[in-house]
Image (cartoon, rainbow, N blue to C red; front, side):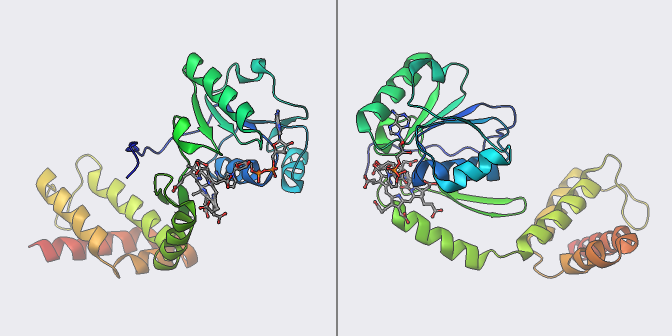
Length: 231
Ligand SMILES: C[C@@]1(CC(=O)O)C2=NC(=C\c3[nH]c(c(CCC(=O)O)c3CC(=O)O)Cc3[nH]c(c(CC(=O)O)c3CCC(=O)O)/C=C3\N/C(=C\2)[C@@H](CCC(=O)O)[C@]3(C)CC(=O)O)/[C@H]1CCC(=O)O
Ligand SMILES: NC(=O)c1ccc[n+]([C@@H]2O[C@H](COP(=O)([O-])OP(=O)(O)OC[C@H]3O[C@@H](n4cnc5c(N)ncnc54)[C@H](O)[C@@H]3O)[C@@H](O)[C@H]2O)c1
């Protein structure tokens, strides 16, 4: 086992400057992962550029500085990805980042960085991120594919309905079908039951998609049927 035990967190990247150094396949994968996560301030430094990076620059998704890295580049960065094919250069970038208290990722020597990037499966609000702590990135990628099969696109819809139900149940003074206030203990049980209910959300999801005017009524119907199950 590696000596590093990683702590997973989910970071909101909006307004955070992400600096990617290198313009090859690996830098490109890191950039795409950042953009998928909503990063809006991605700067890439590299003398050569993968085609997809050129396209992302043309579309204004990232800023590119086409030259080799210089130490000043790191100023103002919140996260740094050192993904050049020069291991000494990657190590220097990581040293500078460490001195400045900036978090850095090293593509060629994960353990020397302050964080590693996980393999990620997304379906709407569902975000599954996993790591093998550097033991086998290829297995991380494989497990991600297995998760993608088990957690397909219905999970995006299921979560959008659960989010609505949760807001409705937690809404201050939420009432049940007969006008009684729902107690905090019952709310918790109701929300757990809703998460376990593999079918109940589907009617609301259908309404949201096809007949938005019916969605609120469908949500009430589902909540009421869950509440009846608690009695
Ligand atoms: C998960 C993923 C995320 C991403 O990059 O977005 C990711 N690597 C992926 C793929 C992949 N990388 C490599 C192969 C070839 C097979 C192999 O070598 O095993 C494949 C497989 C492929 O290409 O299919 C080579 C490789 N990777 C690292 C080193 C250097 C070293 O060992 O330190 C070398 C040798 C370089 C060389 O040969 O010189 C290092 C790291 N790679 C990590 C993440 C971090 C640990 C994560 C973990 O263990 O879970 C870590 C430590 C640092 C980091 O990059 O953050 C992404 C899958 C994305 C997806 O499919 O969604
Ligand atoms: N973490 C991972 O998932 C993973 C996977 C495969 C490889 N790797 C490692 O990552 C490194 C990069 O892989 P790649 O396939 O993208 O390599 P690559 O050779 O395709 O690209 C390297 C890029 O770095 C740029 N570069 C070189 N010196 C630079 C400098 N001084 N400043 C800025 N940019 C510079 C090059 O111009 C090029 O664009 C490899 O050397 C390998 O060790 C990591």
